[in-house]
Length: 110
Image (cartoon, rainbow, N blue to C red):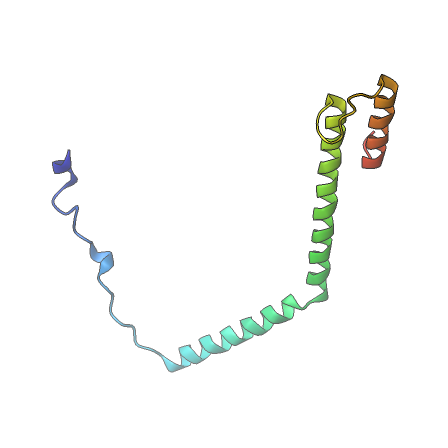
């Protein structure tokens, strides 16, 4: 088994040998620094934009709304199945039906 690995299996390979140092070109370095500065300024401006703040706020509100919708859905299911925090166990059939109807109305599910 081990003999099939080949003679060079322990050899580190060419990728471990560093390549030649490329000459540094001042104009390219300056251009790169200016670009980095411009990117940083644009990034800062974008992070402060009213549009981004509005979208983040909407996202946060949607996340909360979706979390509540999922909780409502599980509450309705729990009431129907008679399990969990919203269990209708111990209620009369009519009370159970009214309770589930109230939960569905609250959740906007018909």
